[in-house]
Image 1 (spheres, helix red, strand yellow):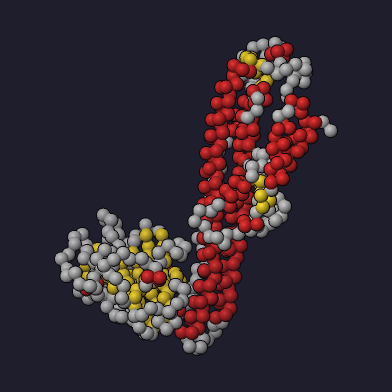
Image 2 (cartoon, helix red, strand yellow):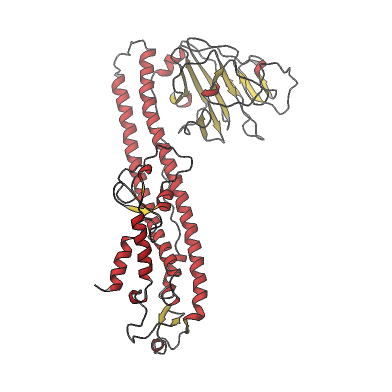
Length: 485
């Protein structure tokens, strides 16, 4: 076998499948494939991600435990020897001499971007071209290679950012799907419980629940296929980019005669390459969680909730009937009683809840920011507030006009295709249930906090947030509910 071909064949065996360069600090997986340690670490790195992320081999997709990665010292030693062997003159790279004249390649044609011998440079084909000794242009093209590499590395960085962003979006979407499945089950169970086993004639709640779950699973499958196709295209594009970077890095380390051979074509291809971003895939869930007739049952637990002015932040203005609150332009001179919030635009309801079922609705209008829910009675009104159940707050909120969140940031963003204008809040104290509903679209489920015992008496929570110029000025209004509806 030709020595050069033999070396090149061995080189393929010690090349990382990810970066397409010589293996650096090679690590082997349980499946037998080997990669650079830095390449695998970069591929799996998800900043802020869960430790339970699913890791797989980049080649065969076999499950991998990161703790089982094994340094392959023997292969690392082979890589060093191959690297030395490849630079040996006796088995050097092809292209060292002109195949036509068997003379050394020492001239460079600027027009064609090719290395050639003296005889070729004097041929009619190149007599009108600018042909110079390779030493005169090697430094210039070395610099062009460096610029091309910088461009591709920037594109590679953007590709990594895109990959991480899409992984996060996908993980968040998967979590939303699982939460929605659980919500559908819980809401039908809640309806059956509230009906006290008196199922409406002609309705089969188990069939309705199964239909809703089947619709969600069909949507899940369709979206998953779109995500997989988009991910495959991105991986293919990234592999092309990695190969181009590896080619340029390898070429930049070669002697001038090999670096310059065909360099113009390589530079043109590198400079024209740009990352093609995939078509955006909507991850907003279209299958909502809705139980027909549930709102009518909840209305039978309508509570006459009223605001407590003694708890209101000094810029909040409360109506005489204590059913409406809005943010004022100026700070009011109010007594600094222990119940009053000092730092935040918060006001609480006047009725403490320690048992039973309670339902109320709040009109939020076209506000771009608000917060609604319940909180424990004995919270500190003067210090920093953390809107988390851990600190005694069960609150959903809207921020920036489109971001619906539950709690602080421990739950994923809520997917609400229809913005709620009236929001329904249902509290079942004994069942440890605090749930929210979108009254605008006839009662679709928004969110239910995980069930856990409440730490004591609870109070309704309201926050109109700030007014921003002429925006976010509508008041929060507690709706009047008729129990007989």
